[in-house]
Image 1 (cartoon, rainbow, N blue to C red):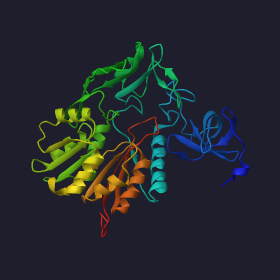
Image 2 (image 1 turned 30 degrees about the vertical axis):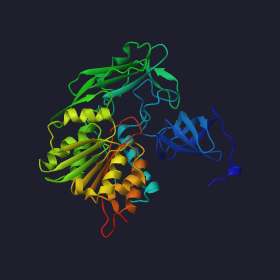
Image 3 (image 1 turned 180 degrees about the vertical axis):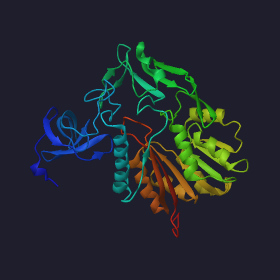
Image 4 (image 1 turned 45 degrees about the vertical axis):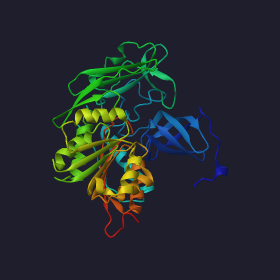
Length: 412
């Protein structure tokens, strides 16, 4: 490790030549120069590059690769004219071959578990998700920023400045014409394309949001969702994640399952079929809008009980009163916010002694931290799989199962 005394001051705008090291969480690659660790965008492991410093903090230096001196064989020409240093902040990996992107995401997941769960032997494969076109034309929902002239665009990386664009190549093709017109006075514009091909646009002007609904179909089941409600962005992600939850959790007829952070009830709809009319699915969600959507879409699923509540508050009551109100809980599905759940909620879940917890995560670091927390309460990582639900970006979706550790008192 380099000592502080050997560090040479760096400033924004400095240009250095470096060798690019391993990938880091967040779409950066590691480089070292002048006694500092530098997080570099637009590079690939093994390349030699000329980089430009874009941000200097006491514990963080960021840079962009502005010239590649020795190229990786996995480097490709970015298909989007708005991708690259200083441009749109949305896509981190357009310069990387799609197969290598998935291997890099696999490394990020494995590194997260080494660092944050002390698990060195996690084997995970990041699978492609059907529906995109070599990593493009997959995003069914887009939040467009609006500049002062009413033109649509996206924020530059770590900037409040909006880059006006005339297209977004990762959006589904039906949304290609959305930026063709201007939206004076709008705060933001949301566009969404349903499974039926219909394009829905919500224009937020002067703080007013028009509520519009989007039709989706997953495994033969139809969903009608408010454009403001959460839905998986990738055209094939909802189906891939439902299949993973069912395959990994293996819900059985007559069982009781909890679906925590249930959103519009996506997983609950398929869990209800799996547990059958004599089973029970308790879906807990804090968003009133999402619960309304769930009520609309699950009205014929009599075995689903919808609860509009903060998950932590509801779990505290369930833990206080024991599982008697809902019977023995066989399985719990978690799809929490990006920050994860933490020790209080993990303990409350373990107190129910489910045979399996299926954890759906969009941040591998938060998942790994929670996996280590669960170990203290008697649950270990069993199976894990990754999905490339956000091609061309550094994001990755991970589904993991946790099962009881034999001989461990889960609630001690």
